[in-house]
Amino acid sequence: MKAVVYRGPEDVAVQDVADARIEEPTDAVIRITTTNICGSDLHMYEGRTDVEAGTVLGHENMGVVEEVGSGVSRVNVGDRVSVPFNIACGTCRNCTQGWTSFCLRTNPTEGVDGAAYGYANMGPYSGGQAEYLRVPYADFNLLKLPGGTEFENDFTMLSDVFPTGWHGTVLAGQEPGDDVVVFGGGPVGLMAAHSALLRGAARVFVVDQQPDRLRLAERFGAIPVDFAKGSPVDQVLEATKGRGADCGVEAVGYQAHDHQGDEQPELVLDNLVQCVRTAGGIGVVGVYVPQDPGAATEGAKEGRIGWDYGSFFMKGQRMGTGQAPVKRYNRQLRDLIVAERATPSFIVSHELPLDQAAEGYAHFDNRDDGWTKVLLHPAG
Image (cartoon, rainbow, N blue to C red):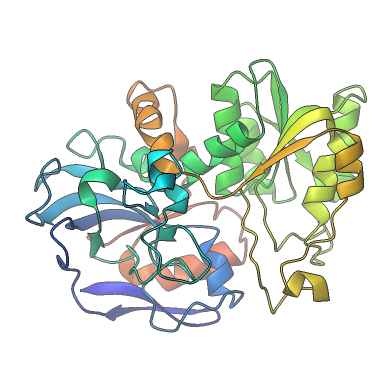
């Protein structure tokens, strides 16, 4: 089958790889209809992880069930499904408590709980930027969707970015009527802003400097904050009459840059501490890693980020972090899409056949104007 293979920094290619197949009775094989390039894929693409050459990328996947193992009883051939990026067993302590993003059984990597498709340190699982994908524990992991092709570009956000954005607002403790500030106007940040409005936010500020991202934020009712035009903290404090936002979401991660392009891994965390009010909450869903040899500081190379913890403590703020347990949210978000209350497809800018994946990666990584979210369709 054809698949997108990582070959080295800024080098991906569509190649022939071994076909996805049933390996355990609880597996299913999915024929991929849509698979997305995620912002977190760019950490690997840029060579900022230890992903191995030859890895098939892609953790944002959906499609149609092509084959099931003998132990699969709930999912049937022909079902249209969303595939959460978390690979979870469904029965370990973390899974039974709803933390499928930290499954204790699916990742043999020492010191890492939780597995995912086609990602560094997240287990030996091929990704879904391919014609087919093997899904372990299919009965537990797969979310059934209405048949046909309706809402395809909305449903494809259910595997990661929409639940992750929603999770950011939950970690931040958002309540109806809150002012919410979201740092990062990429797909996850825009999904966090969309989620905050769906959850009853009074106002949502989206901080970025890319004009296309800020235009999208404004289009669905958020307030754009261009940090190239001045301190985002000052802009948010002025808009809230000095009080600060009630809560905030970090949707940037460890490769944060200032408006001049200099990397400052602590920048967004510091800004959130300053512009979220006392006793407010912060949800961190941007990716941070334990080691980053390419980091801008010696501490950050070891995963140590020197952020303003003193002010965070003095302000009595709280913080939640970590990858989203997609199954906790995806059924409800699916139903919001079907009811036409949620429209996460507004972030989609480009749909490409699989064989143009390298072009999509290059444009998305360069932050070329208008390239806000890239979908790949293996069938063309």
